[in-house]
Amino acid sequence: MKKALIGLVALVALAAVAWGSWTAFAADGESTTRATCEDRSTELSVEPDDGGLEVSFELQSKAPGETWQLLVQQGGTTLLEGERLTDEDAELDVDAPADEDGSDTFTVTATPADGTAPCTATLTR
Image: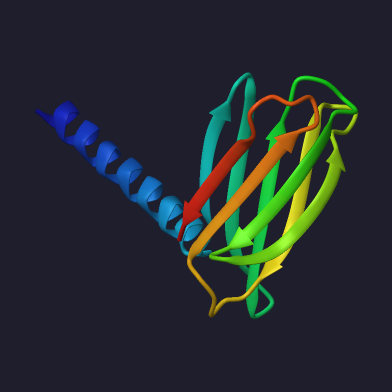
């Protein structure tokens, strides 16, 4: 009985630590979504930044030096648009400022120059 009580106390303590860590992490206001597109992976996140928001998009592609056309939007407002290349690790990373008082829906469309289907990531915070 004493071992069971010690085990229960340890489990409750572990749960409290896990809950505290999760609450501290969630308190920063960051929202993130991850997805796959063909053989590629994407991550779209939005977090508070200096009185506004920062939108971050990462794409893990197939090869370095690939050309992508990017469109980052907050609701119907374009935040960033242009051509980007994957780096030496076949990654593409972009950040764009966003309006805290704007739409809560963010969409990134990444279209590869090779003509394959675009990757689209959408997040509502």
